[in-house]
Length: 296
Image 1 (tube, rainbow, N blue to C red):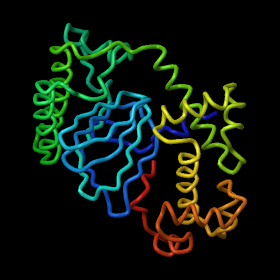
Image 2: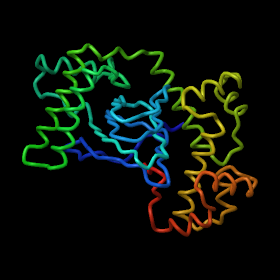
Image 3: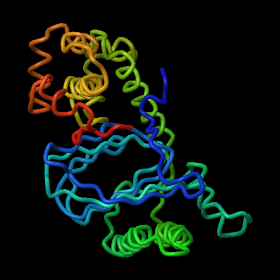
Image 4: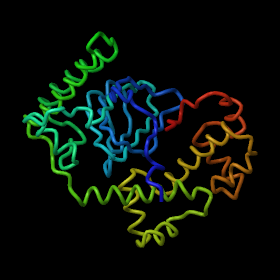
């Protein structure tokens, strides 16, 4: 199983400055960022609107002023239908914050770099959130204006954020059991990505991963925030959209490639999720990028 299947390959920032900041909005078609992971840390500050955010084994209903930290290699997903949704995103590489001299300041970073401690998923302390949100705002401002020296300012602001967590003793030890559970989920999701055209079911997955069907079903819903059928249909529809945009395969061939032997059922699922038929989607999206799907 290829771990890279769920690894986001989009580059954030540049090799010389691996930090990126941007504002995201929910298009009228809806927002669907499927489960994925990357080696960087991601900060999400929700400005307005609502969304469902899955981080590891937890799913949150976000609202304005919520602040989340996505740890390195943590599976996460965002789904929204709220057109008022907007949120700040900061993605940065922890190793980029290293000092060339291993001084006492560097020692504070090493547990984070070695994945011995992690950021809390959600910042719930009002005092901490106030400090961090102020730094996020400065970060968004300096990376937007790009005045001379903004890279230095951006790094210093990230270091200040880490200092806030340290001052509040808010970093927590990485639990081996949690990390192992995350790895198991990655293996399951990668298996699905690699076998989309196969006849997949709870029974097949339970047997493949040596679990009871009842345990697998409960575990999958808890870990992803979706039941198995809903998740499988979502990733199959994502693959179908890609094939409709990038190939000349017939709708029947695409249905079979995505694991649907019944073309009528495929059309019903596609229309329910995309609000149009496969043929209409191909016509409207040919040569364009879908606003509904996040491509990585």
